[in-house]
Length: 110
Image (cartoon, rainbow, N blue to C red):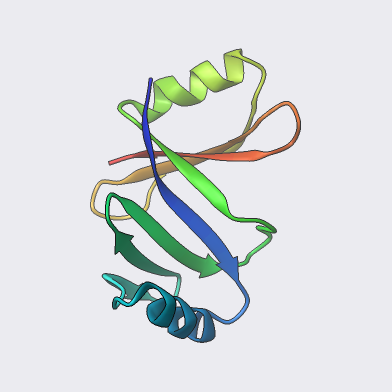
């Protein structure tokens, strides 16, 4: 079911300041740069920055072929739905679930 874990999103309070730091540390310019998300491609992985909005820790997104089936499987295994699947542009869908310990797991269908 899980194909890879291609994305980690870091919550930030100051997107411009974080973008400058990550640009310097990664040595590359962001490929996506908007007021709600800044993304850097690092090999096969994506490092994302997003306004904090309640997220306290970095969030890894697991790549899945069918996000609805993955959400259902996680819930059936004991996770709770945090955010329903939604389109975030370009046909990419994301959702989040919480495991039994309260950890957030991001799911992404590209």
